[in-house]
Image (cartoon, rainbow, N blue to C red; front, side):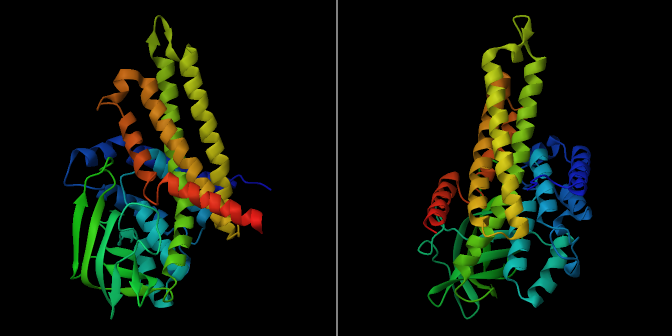
Length: 371
């Protein structure tokens, strides 16, 4: 079985890297970080939408490119490498996938073309307090088509136009679409370690909610959506981890101490070797996740959990060791090391922390072994 990408997919990856190197250097993330009034780069968002990337996995009938999830994976990897300060994941991995997974024909016709064109920013609002997503945790409620309650933290909730919300309906959980520009919605921007990806608390007081999928299937749909997003997020994390390794290697070769490159010292060699091994182990794991996602394989729940855990730990480790390799200067504002450390932390929490995904992984392994 060949787990590598095709030549066409590699070409997409190459072109995406060339585009992002030219149009989205790390100075774009810095500009957002330095300006409290900004939570994303609108110019980069517009240009990415112009490339058609938001519609990569959206069928042509709904205004997308009609390619597939493998192509979306390679683009996600390059976006992670570039630290793109845009709400791509919230829109393409969560909102678009939710509509394709559970949306009615009318909902798909109404929203997917706008998503593909970059006219709509999405977010995924499920949790209401720290901890793994469970039915008991959700207290937001929909009655007569009106939503009340609150959600936090919601990645990109401060700028989103449309939210996918998990709420109670008649004692059971369902998913809903809520337009955040309507009445009955208030937002409170939250402070986080990575301000280049905005986070908000959303409060609903009678906001209009339209069910997405069947009544009572909300938790199952949310779990399925998280599995899809976990694989795509893992590719973003892999891209960031690889770039952190490249930065550390480059610095180790150019920085001299006692008349020789610091990369010649055993302690630095070991750091770089450990980063490389973790990244490559994560790569093989997320490639397996990509196959399961694209093929709709029954192994997706297990592959998604494996991908999420491996990529989260690889990115955290690479970002941390990149700082250490740079030494004292690595902690300064002028270096880019902290940007990758911030993003590693942010991506590690956006769809549930590593601890929760490890628990999911154990559960999936137990189910497989019991079968």
